[in-house]
Image (cartoon, rainbow, N blue to C red):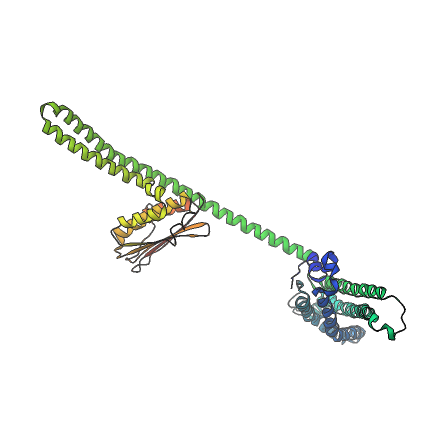
Length: 448
């Protein structure tokens, strides 16, 4: 059943015929109508004895107040109103699917140092009197509803059946008129059942539930708390992204300095030596062809070694295999170059096609650094690399069976990878207990 939490929800759950349309036309056969009738029957049975006690005990206790014995009786009746109200709220929820928030009652009404003050608070509490009023008025509504529905519904059904046996009855009205009036009576009975039940629910909200002002205040407090939580999360996220951006800038500066150093100490020096060798070959070409040939051979070797160094340098910036053949092939190439046996696991050949270039690059460099650490520091016998798409994120896991104890210390290669990943709004998790291997798990968004 539909759980109703407000006036509009009450109409949808209890009296859908009032919204018009198909629900209005089918009111006599609607489940809401039969729930309304059963609510009236059960309500009459439940509320009748309780109302009898209330209508007897309250006037009697008020009459006996002057004798000193009426006050305790009245207080007990008022205290008993809370469980009765809870029972009614539970019945409305079970039969009609209507949730009514209970009012906030003092937990210890009789806990004052002076007992008469506690009794006075109970006797002056309008919510408890409202509970008792609901018992009496609710019983009256249920009885009136049953009587009206029985009269209209029973009369309507009798009129619908009258054409079948009117030969034995002294009725001269046309059959079509009898059927029309019977249908109208049955339809009115169904509409009345839903309407009175809606009135009963509204009465229960006013007398058994939390006041509308309190409910609005609770909603406002909940909205304010939610807004505060969102603001706090946003601040934490902003701080996290600021730190990640700072680490990414630092890592980029370190990469630039490394590239400059590699170019100066490697390719640039080789090119200088290449120029010298070519100069020797040019000068010796006419006078000593053998020296010139040797110089050219040496220059040729320098060219090949320089190209190899440049390829390695470019691979450190952005590997060509990643662009040409995709992440799966790039990870397999890294595994093939690692001296430790590495197993690369990808769910399917095209399963990583949804990852963006930035995510692929991050996964590639994380794998390269992790496998370098495996080869140099872990003492592992084997390693595993797994890449997969999880929703809109690329998850990479690199694990080994080495000695463990790895830490992403500031300035280390792992710390640089953490900065690269967090700059992409990703997550970086390193699990490396001593003696139990290392597992590095990275997730980055797939958006490029």
